[in-house]
Amino acid sequence: MELARALPKYTDQIRLVSRNPKKVSSNDQLMAIDLLNPDALKKAIKGSSIVYVTVGFDYNIKVWRKNWPTLVRKVIAACQEYECKLVFFDNIYMYDANHLDGMTEETPVNPPSKKGEVRAQIAKMIMDEVKAGKLTALIARSADFYGPGIKNTSMLTETVFKPLSEGKKANWMGSAKYKHSFTYTPDAGKATAILGNSDSAYNQVWHLPTAPNPFTGKEWVEHIAKEMGVKPNYREASKTIIKVMGLFMPIMKEMVEMMYQYDRDYVFNSDKFEKQFNYKPMPYQEGIKKVVQSDYQK
Image (tube, rainbow, N blue to C red; front, side, top):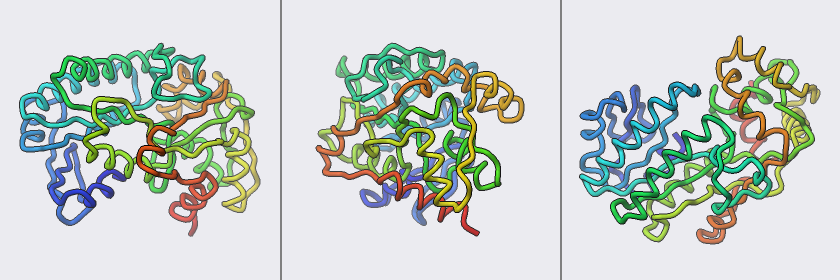
């Protein structure tokens, strides 16, 4: 959504492809397809100069193992056939768990989770073709994210913003004493559009702009609660609590193996992008204010 908002700065030829696409700008072309249908996928890609892959499959390891390699393989083949550039929106699941404090584009790849193994696999598929000179592509990586209008796909929304807005306790995963970076989604959208339209950005990995000096879990809860005008009540959610929450929220069931991201400092560095494109990401306090104003003020 945020990427679609940012792209009209560069082109009025935008094709939005998904099961149920909706126009973001009046000139958007819509194509409703099953992305796993190879013929439909090729039709969607044909005629494009840049293909942005921002797909979000169900947060389930069985789905990921089945769908991600299949989709990426087909996208790469179509981009090669039609000579399209590829921009792949990625996360940091493939990074070594012992190197999360100060993550850069050079952080070692050593996935500590099953989902991380899938992400490492598909990133390698793309970059192997790049290194072989058979594909022009880039990978744009985001930290965990937050932003206005996000429903069900942001951990910060589900565990802090939403419960506090309902007068309930926030549930911070793991220990709330550790720092945790979050990428502001409008920044991610604008930056991905910038990368896709910069020839010099291709054939490498980029971290999307993310504010430095992130809050600890406790501080995130306190700042969000203050902006909402409520008490900063929260509990630290252990693996057991996350499993119980998973009975009511399927996404939480899948988060058990990701708990390693919350038992240490998780600090995401985007200096490379910021310096290259002279871009300053949204400060956390201001981002929180915009989310509350957009989604939680009556």
